[in-house]
Amino acid sequence: MKIKIIGKELKITEAINDYVEKKLDRIDKYFEDAEAEVTLRTEREEQIAEIYVIANGEKYRAVTEDKDMYASIDKDIDIIEGQIRKAKTKKEKMLREGSIRTMEVNQEKHTEVENEIIKTSYYEIKPMLPEDAVLKLQEKPTHNFLAFINVETGKVNVVHKLKDGKNFGLVEPEE
Image 1 (tube, one colour):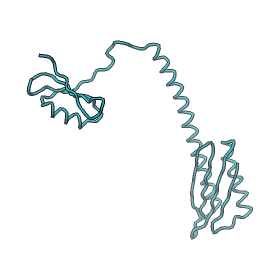
Image 2 (cartoon, helix red, strand yellow):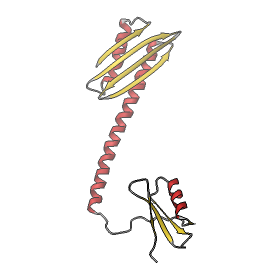
Image 3 (cartoon, one colour):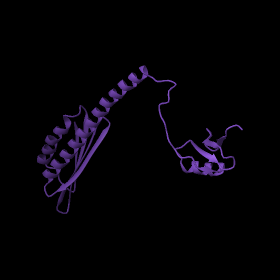
Image 4 (cartoon, helix red, strand yellow):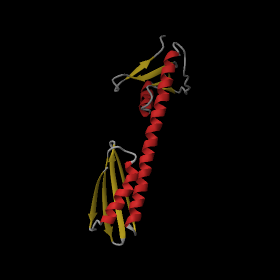
């Protein structure tokens, strides 16, 4: 692991340097090639440690403050190790679910249903003018059509969005 230690308004002693390298070994075991940038600074009575790790295209960062610099470094290492474990678990879970999804998709291809009604939706049909139906459909951007009773004819009509996305079509039964 490549380690860069920076001290802002703080002299990096050999002891602090060795401590940081020893603690970063806990992070190094997760990756083959990683880079770490450690910034240590003092503000008033607080010792602030910031650790930034880049590995496998992922970025991990932790900033903590404590009265003791060593405690601040320990907290950062714990935080970053937790972030790494969480990311690793998330990736493994996605891979597992991905393979299960792939299996389900492959199984669905073999038992594909055709020419069957596979979904039924229920909705209320209200009497209105075609212009009012267009306005009602515009209020619901996720819907593609609206069935209604045409007040002028007393028959069921359907107003639908056309492919151009700007205009609408009207479906009326023949006389």
